[in-house]
Image (cartoon, rainbow, N blue to C red; front, side, top):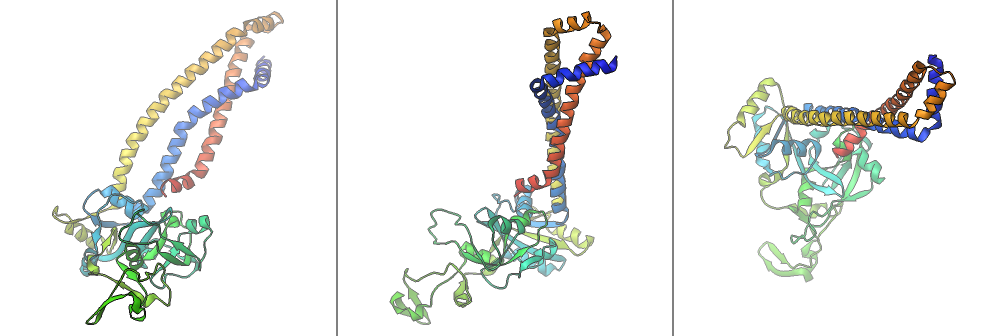
Length: 391
């Protein structure tokens, strides 16, 4: 009897494929939403946690700790006040650990330009996959995804983006020579363009290079003691080459130059505690944060949002189940003559009830199968999507 009921249910489901797919698809989507949400949250948590845990401490201008973390770890430009170079010198003079500067204020189209020093690559376990490391002013190395996306290789060039359409200071995009491409590591480093600090300051306009005024007398306005005053026709360089490298010079006191943040790697737990104590005073212009603690605070907030989302999706699932029950009830009501005919030919009432139950079971199983397929697909691609979202 059960086999006969299952056969009748299967024949009806196979005959009305569109109706079955619609019902199964609706159930699958409602079931998939909370599952996929959980998968994406877990992937985001894993990606962000690894980045935060590998960075013991961050120093930046006093303000939003979350903005500082997003800027230094994920290269997201935030409304964050800069920190002066003198604070980097003070950290190094304290000799309590390594201090690595970061300048994340400029872009090369969609890729963040990260000004830093060679120690950063060791901290992030970044190696050169092709080419060589930065050798002079105006050089850069590309993250793996940036190089792949744009089809760039060592020997090519990439331009910095002009940050303002109307730049009255005359700061032009800098043409940077690509010396190498880094190995991929599945982090925001893959989407960055790395330069040294001096190149970042050159992009900012704190340095410039121009043709030798002494050899182009038509550009000279007047001659002073040990100084030539030139007019605006002097040609400024927007690219650093071996020939014009000596023509670039910086202005002002470099200790007053600005950074976005400073990565700090203490020597030991005692040094970490001493560093934290140095920045406890509220009068300090800078602050020290532990990215792991800020990450945990962020995750606790996201967990509350996630719980609320699950509650809403749970109500949606109940509503979808109620609508599906209504659809089946209406369908069975419209098929009363069909069931009466089956009863007239000898099908027992129990077999008819089993037929209805099997129909519901087959549609529900189809919905669960579709939900599983969608969830597995999302799980398979979650890490890639999260990296794109954090880009």
